[in-house]
Structure formats: C-alpha cells, structure tokens
Length: 231
Image (cartoon, rainbow, N blue to C red; front, side, top):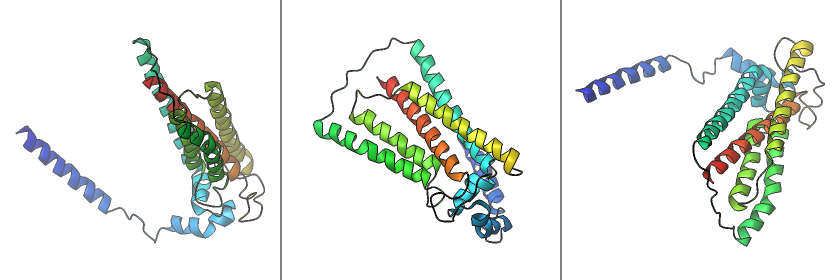
C-alpha cells in the first residue's frame, strides 16, 4: 500500500512539474532581454564574448552570489572534516612512491596546466572561458601533483592568502563600479580599449583574474582537505 501511495505521489508531482515547465518559454527567440544582450553586449561592455558581458556585466551581482556559494561550500567541507578528525586517532597512510615516468610527467605538465588555466580566465572576455573555468583548470594541476607526486603539498597559507586577496579585489572593484561607474554592481569605470584586443572590456579582465585565482585556490584547498582526510 505504501508503495502504491508513493507511486501515485510521484506521478502527481511529476505531472505538476511538467505542466509548470511547459508554460515557460525556454529559449524563446522573442525575448527582448536576450536580443538586447546580443545586440548591445559588445557596445555596453567592450567584451567580444557575449556570455562574459552577461556574467560579469549585466548580471554581475549573480556572479558574486556564485562565488559566495563556492566559498561557503569550501568552508563547510573544511569544518565537517575538521570535526571528524577530532574524534578519531589519525594514522598516517604510507604512500607508495610514484614511478619515475609519472613523477617526471607531473612536474613537466604542472606549469603547462597552470599556464592554460591562466589563459582561460585572462582571455575570458575574448574567447569562451572565464574565471570559474580557469580556476578549475588550475585546481586540476594541483590535483595531478597530489596524485602523481604523493609527498608534494601546497602551502595552506598561500592558498588562504590568494583566496582572500582575490576575493577582496572582486568586491572592492564591484563596489567601486557601483559608486563611480554607474547604477549596478561591477559597473565599468575604466576605458574599454579596442574591441577584440587583450587590453579591452574595462574591468572585466581584472574581475576574471580575481575570480580565477579565487576559484583555483578554493578548489585546491578543498582537494587538500580531502587528500589529508584520506591519509
């Protein structure tokens, strides 16, 4: 009987979700907002990448919320793992040393992956990419080092300082734009430069660099916490 009731409830809820979503015009080409972004994005922000003009321009306050969510998640994970360590006796795992090929490969690829991650967020206003994507690539470089060079660890002080400074740059730049540049968070107050060049789009490259470093350091900190928990 309980199974039948659960099935009926599932069907009713599913029908409600389908009915609700069917009335929303997903991807409608008649959206005035979407057309405005496409037609005016470059002129308003100086960014060739229209997605960037939305993420760091028109909806920059949403991006601040996303960065905050990642920060809270990293803090929460660290707190949970720290609480668990207090109640159990820590035993250091004995890692087997990596092979020479793996160890050498990690050391060779590490700076290249960091360079690619930096490229992704520095060029975010010109090509597909941005701060979150570039930060994730940077964190993957540290994950590779942890897995391939078992005894290598990053400085937690470095990670915390990088995360704090980049977050401060993001917020201060946004508030400066609000006070000086216009009516919304992250309003541009710098020259937009020449379209399709690296030094263009006003404050957007600065914001993407700050987001990239912040996301990269936070995800690296999460990886470090998980690696330490497994030891």
